[in-house]
Image (cartoon, rainbow, N blue to C red; front, side, top):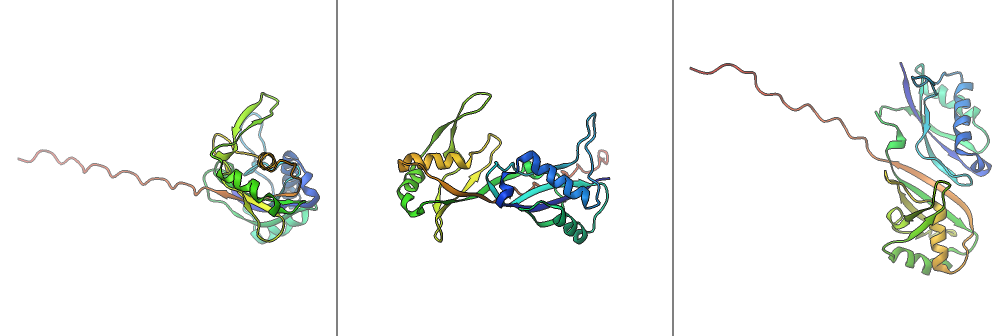
Length: 232
């Protein structure tokens, strides 16, 4: 029997350089060292049941990341949280852990990601560039990929970019769809094009991951009344 859990954690500072696969390894190692056994998938090549809601690019910090995992035994939450926190590497910090009753994994229910980009320059200087971005109906960029370049309309995923009132930076919500999403560096590239100069981010931070509410199973349709024969 599997017992499903979800943890939320942050990955900041030097930990932002830990790759996606290494992040998974760090979390698996922390759970194993805490004294609890991860459950494994079935099949020819069983794998630990542990996944992240969204990969985090190398160099990008995360303030509220989501990890789903399954254990072979029920775990006391206070004990589990304390032991996992102790085993995480510097820069990764546990925020919460609890049982998960959703039928589908978080990765299939991501709706939006929030981002904050802190700039090395005065953010207000880019206000005209933000206005041009926000008023555009579409912004098609060429995404370079090993398997072939692809044109992406980033306005489908990030409709508006806002100045942060306090501090030098910008913020935006990025939509995640079955067809894909945008990348923070693509938003920076588009703004730099409108500004006519390079934009140098001091920090790129994913502030949140918002999940769709899981659809509840529909109640069974009421059956027909039992046949009682023809009245005479």
